[in-house]
Length: 244
Image 1 (spheres, rainbow, N blue to C red):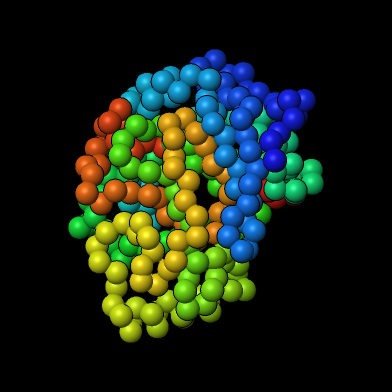
Image 2: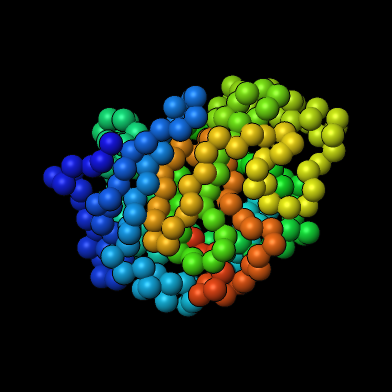
């Protein structure tokens, strides 16, 4: 399902304008998950790359296998104004007041140095109302984003009610077969099955519910540069319903 021209708000912040004009809503897996893809999201993607070079990247959380720098508040506000009505439409959420956080992100951790949690697919939280966005700003050999089903439970998305069952089953999996090797989980084996993948074309973005099991598609044999001009640079963001 494409988005009608009359419903395509645009952000107008100089250098940061977004035009989600090629947005397409599709579904994947037997669970019928919503996936929105938007080609050529930024009017001037090279401006974003130029700005990324000026940021102070740092390791922010132990889960992310690399470094991040926060996206400016003015940029987030501009994008939020343009994307909020579309998020309502794409994810059938009615009229929601959204909040947004965004970061520049660079995957930099070599496969051999990955922590156990980084060798497995993950979720960004257990609230299905939280929407994740990945905007790909790299031209490397690395890919986009893959989605997974946990084999022993059949779960593809985690809610608060299901998380304990999933965690206990995964612990049994690891106790039986051991941890996966030190590598990015491109196919999910042995405990997960890949259900779908998006290629991550330059300046394309994907939107999906953050509680779906997923992982970045990282070529374990390709270099991971810490230079934003050469590495796997993305802008990732979370959109959450604002608290009343």
